Amino acid sequence: MSTTNVHADAFVFFGASGDLARKQIFPALHAMVAAGELDVPVVGVAHSGWTVDDLRDRAKESCLENGMKDDADLKKLLKLLDYVDGDYKDAGTFDALKKALKGASRPTHYLAIPPSLFGTVIDGLRGTGLHKDARVIVEKPFGRDLASAGKLDELVDRAFPEDAIFRIDHYLGKDEIMNLLYFRFANSIFEPVWNRDHIDHIEITVAEDFGVQGRGAFYESAGALRDVVENHIFQVVALLGMEPPSYQGYEAVQQAKESVFRAMRPLAREDLVRGQFDGYKDEEGVAADSDVETFAAVRLYIDSWRWSGVPWLLRTGKKLAVTAGEVVVFFKRPPQVLFEDAEADKTPNYLRFRLSPISEIALAARVKTPGQEFTGTQQEFVLHTESPLERAPYERLLSDAMKGDKALFTSRGSVEAAWRVVNDVLTDHAAALPYAPGTWGPKAADALAADWGGWREPVDDKEIAGSPSGTTTTQEKS
Image 1 (cartoon, one colour):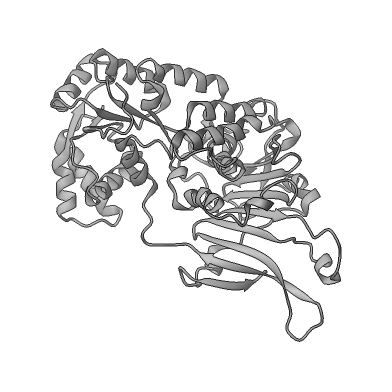
Image 2 (tube, rainbow, N blue to C red):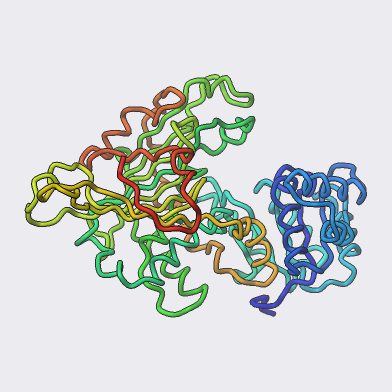
């Protein structure tokens, strides 16, 4: 039986005592209850020696910590909760889970656990028949390279068909990311210039001014290239670079995105600069001789008709100058010089998407200065898109998975195609270069963008936070 567009009749999450559950899952479930989207049994599974009362206490603490009220919605969530404690290697754990589901025939299983445990849990589900007509949600990272991603898919494929597998990346559930897709295809004015003939280059920055925050052991197994570039940033590239979907629907969008990944030129050693902030080796769980990158800058090309020859400059890092997510699409300069001041300005017109922490869309264009003859400045026309109505990513994604809507999830083909792009440089790369906290990474990264005027440095959101939400303003380019 296909699970597409059939609402699940139970929600099971493995790893119920973990940090992800506390920080994201419980608040998302509460919001789903409040929105009228969750009214089925919710079963947490872990190996922690807990009882159902312990789980309910953790859920209540989590929701209150995240600003939710002790109201009727929270009481309803706590009533829906049940708990199974046991070793995932013990068949008895899954017998107990089957009993706790009380005859539910279309559960959604969320594997909020390390990928190393996926095979054990999936075999346990198969052994008790809990995989039949069910869905499974797997958390990123989807492997560590192309080979491990393939093995992970093989594990999940043992029990679930592709239409029942939901690969969750919370980044795709953000309103700011969804707006990239909407903005591109809901407006016709940019399509004629959205190509190699009019776009000079594109920059994407995902910067954080903080470090690994006690997650040194995890970061040692990932690094910035795997943790952010290969999934989060590549997803943004796909949304900006894809062709218009041929029809409405999840499959059309996924096919268009996968085509972008397949057209990406595999990265070579010279396309990557890796950095490591001073002090990273002092973090708990980090090896004294670690070469793991906390900064990665990439020069990427998409060898397609639309994007041939257009460089995509991507960077991410921790302990950088500011915390900001930003996309800047730089247009080519006018073909003939009519105004000398415009030619002297080193920054061409651009379209800017501010993704985080404050969201906005800005178009930069030159405007004549009043009282002067044919001289002007480049200014931004800014639309602030921040809204209190935004849904948290996990709330949206878990709700969609329960409904069988895969629009915001990642396909197997896209995952494997994205890994092919970075697979060689995961091992064939230069050593990570040191950089001082509060800077924009190692100076060597500047060379990647030198031919296109250097990197644009996002400003601190504190400088733009005073602009009123939902209004259109102009602001002079700094």
